[in-house]
Image (cartoon, rainbow, N blue to C red):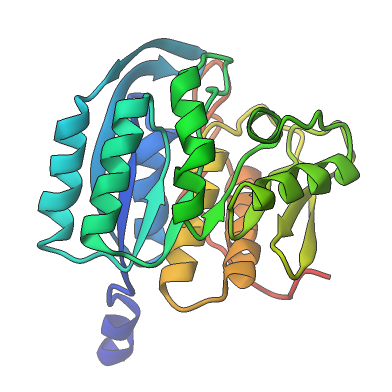
Length: 278
């Protein structure tokens, strides 16, 4: 019995997070670490920015110097080699350039990019020059990009009103060099939530229940970290997306109702995968 327990407690993989810090703990690197840990893996981190925020909004964003971000990545990853990388908030063009240099040096094959652009409360978290280099260079270096609908609109130039528009935007991102795209459909005004996975050979629409709650702070960060964790443990990219969506849905449905604004989700939720998506 003790042996079985110890086997369950074994660390499954190592994930390097490159993302911003959220002082309220619901999103950013805090959400990433909670997610990766709760799914049984080990989290390393390189902080790209420090945000002053709570559930009601973002007060300020302070970027970490680009060289120091590169140093965090290289110093950590050359000692403890990650099995996968999750990239979140990248505030400026110099930061993205240094991340690109770092990625080539550490040579990790499994990378998930969550192109964080706007906070839940509406604050802009990335500048226009950073968006351009993200589109022209960074998305070509990762295995999966996970934009929500506003982010997909900015990256693709497609205005999204329905599922077909989501597919069109995903195809544009594939044409820009993305290998796999998962567009998150939570912003659509629909009874169900549709998340669309697409690459050059297949399209998969994941359909989920929509929960009536304002407590969804950090869902994007959490999803991309969950996907990176499942992917690092040997799941296919599509299966990792499926399991990540299941994890986030469970976290939303059991949210702790903290804060006066858009509260956090429950990263410590007990998730049981009972069936495949149809």
